Amino acid sequence: MQLFLSSIRIAAATMVICVAGYTAAVWAVAQVVTPDTANGSLITDRDGKVIGSRQVAQAFTQPGYFWPRPSAVDYDGAGAGGSNWSPTSAGVANRGKEMVERYGATTRNPLPADLAAASGAGLDPHISEGGALYQIPRIAKVRGLELARLDELVRGAAFSPGGILTQDRIVNVLELNLALDALQKARQGG
Figure (cartoon, rainbow, N blue to C red):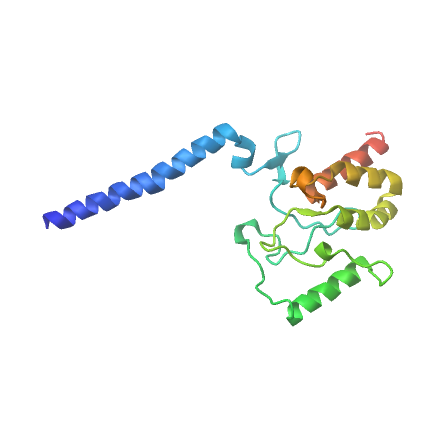
């Protein structure tokens, strides 16, 4: 019995140290080193109301906004995960056809791949710079903005996640749409 109680105490101490202690230590270091990221990379409005996160995609469906990649989890941050469909599945083909129709893509104006395919977790908040540029004509028409100004907005928001080591540039859809709203508001004088 003494051996059993000793084993229980060791197991409890190990859980306290390895679970609670380690978690608290990682949380504390993150709060000091990168508090914004540690707290969800939240974007707030002027009143402090949370609009969204820089790290989780949101569904934008109105034609006057940039649209994100499709989501296998319907943009539910609590349920991140891929669809587990194989590249040859009917589900992938149907989603691809749906996205081609949604964007009005043609053989002369093909849809960038990231606008037709969900990311691995289904919550990627970024699209390629090319994917954002592809959407400019629709947004310009709906909002009455100049193509050149929207091009400048997208190119200004694009960045290389690998720094100078990569040529692929991406944009954060939520941040781009917030900049788009600010541009529209400034254009209207308000």
